[in-house]
Image (tube, rainbow, N blue to C red; front, side, top):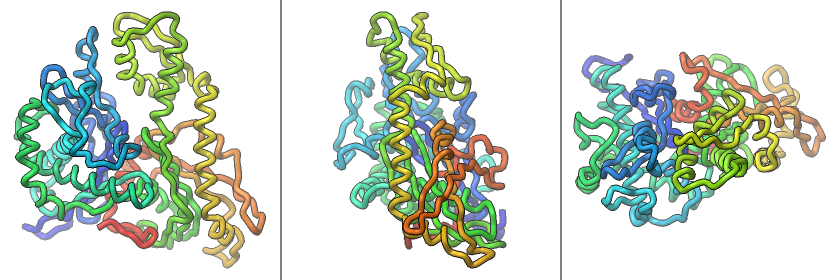
Length: 463
C-alpha cells in the first residue's frame, strides 16, 4: 500500500451524510479515493454503495439502522411502523438549538427509552463507522486504521448556520466513533434500546479523545463534488457550475479554474460569486408523488395507509424515473393512482420546483458576473482563449432529473460585453470511477471529500 513495513497507513474517511442516503469514501496513502460498499455490507440486494439514512425506534424496544430499519418497519403489514427517515433535515432547516436537548417525538420512538436528536445522530454514525471499519479491516492490512482522520461534507450555509452544523456534526461523529467501539463483535444492524442508552452514556465520557481525528468544519457539498469532475481534461481553463440535487437540499457553486497539463487533479480553482443551498430537492418530488397518489385515490385512506405510503414513496419515485411509471399497491391490495414520468414532470408543482432551481443557478451566475465576463472575453491562446460555454455538472440523486435538459436549452448573456455563453450539461465520470460509473453522480461528494490534497477554495482547506 505504499508504506514502510510496520508503519500505519494514512487513511482519510469522508462521510457524505445525506437526507435520504449516506455514502462514505476513503483514500489510503494519497491513492485515488474509493467508495465503501455500505449497502453491500448490509446485505441490501439493490444498493451497493448507498445506505438508507434511516433509523427505526421499534415497538420491540430495539433500534434498527439503514436497510434493517426499512425491512423491520414493513415486517408487520397490518401495523407498519414510522421510521426516522430525514434526520439530516433537522440540521438543514431546524432551529439552531442544542440537539442534545431535543427529544425524539413519541411518534418516531416506540422503544419506551428516551433519546435525543443528538443521540440518534451518534447511533447512525456508529452504524456507518462499524460498516466502514469492518470493511477496511477485511480488505486491507491491519495498519489501515492506525492513522485515520475523518472528514464530512455538508450543504452550503451562511456563516452562522454553517458553524452550528459543523459543531453538531463534529460532536456526532466523535460520539459515533466512541460508541462504535462499544458495540461489540455480535452487533448486526440493530441494538436493544436500553443497551443503546447505556452505551451512549458510557461512550460520552470517552468521545473527547476522538475530536483530534475529525476535521473541524465540513466541506461544502458542491465543492467536494467538483474536485474530481473538474479534473477530467488537462491543459484548459474553465467555468463550471456544480448542481448537486440531493434529497433535502440542492447545492450550487460556480468554479473558475485552471487544469494544467500533467496534474492529477485540478490545482487552481476558486468558487466564484456566492454558492447557494436551497431546501428544494428530492424530498419535494417525494411530496408531489405522495399528493398525486392520494389525490388520485377514489376513497378514504386510513392512518395505516398513510404510514405505508410514507414508507414506500422513495421506492415509487425510483420506479417513476427508472421505469417510467409507478403503480402503488398497498399491502392489503388497495390500488392507488398510477403515476407516470410524463404526468409527474408536467405537473404544475414539479414545473414550479424546476423553475426555482433554474433561478437559483442564475442567481449564482449573477453573483459572479464579472469573472464570467473576464473568461468570456480574454484572448491569450492557447490556454487562455475565451470560454464559450459554462459547464453544468449534475450530481446527487437528482442527477437524472429532466431539469438538466431544460437548462441545456438556455444560455447566459455576459455583462458588460454582451457575449452569450451556452450551458454545456455534462455527466463526467473520472477515470477514478472504476467499477462504479453508474453510481458516480451520487458518490461524487464523498469521493471528492476524501481526496488527500484538497484544492484551495476561497482560501479555506479542510484540516
